[in-house]
Amino acid sequence: MKLCGLYGITAPYTTLAAIEQALLGGVQCLQYRYKEGLAAPDPSAVAAVCQHHRVLFIVNDDVELARAVGAAGVHLGQDDLSVAEARATLGNRAIIGVSCYNSVARALDAAAAGADYVAFGRFYPSTTKPLAVLASPQILRDARACIQVPIVAIGGITPINAEPLLAAGADAIAAIEGLFGQPDIAAAARRYRVLLDAPRRY
Image (cartoon, rainbow, N blue to C red; front, side, top):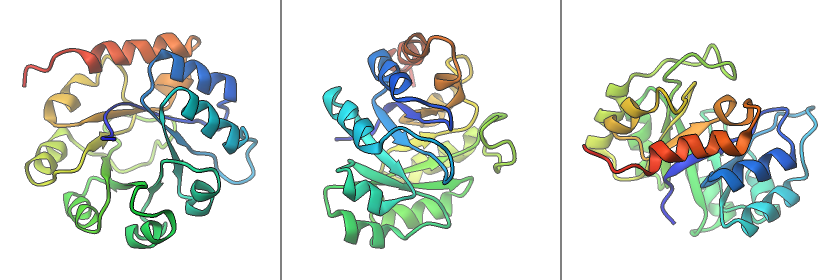
């Protein structure tokens, strides 16, 4: 299954009920991202909810957890295992994504190593990672010209500011605060989907 559309990423406070609301609103891929020491919903329960709604379930960083709960795949940062190491653990059918920040060269290396998608950002001010390296829409254009795997844009993206990133070549928009930080999570997801599902003119 090709990764595209609305890519939800959990926040430290995200509950299982909130995740289900996001899925009901139209999230097409969910990344389970909780840091050590923080309370988090049972990953097996999250995996089951995603399976019920036919939503891709991706685990952040933790390859062994992804394998244990039968996740669709894993997302890797610069300090995590290599794509090859993750592939050896999870198998050929797993979806492996790689954070590429603002580096097309890193994305090219990831794609050559067998990554199934690459992610760039942050593109806008972000409450989740305020000090993350800033990327520009031109990064997406440059990547789109030379990379065949799906491209995810992340970082402060809302339904209001996402359009330039889609026009520049993003296949998926990742949302954390714009989704799970909203009072009506399902409605927030639907607002993203209205934009993402609209016919593209470029």
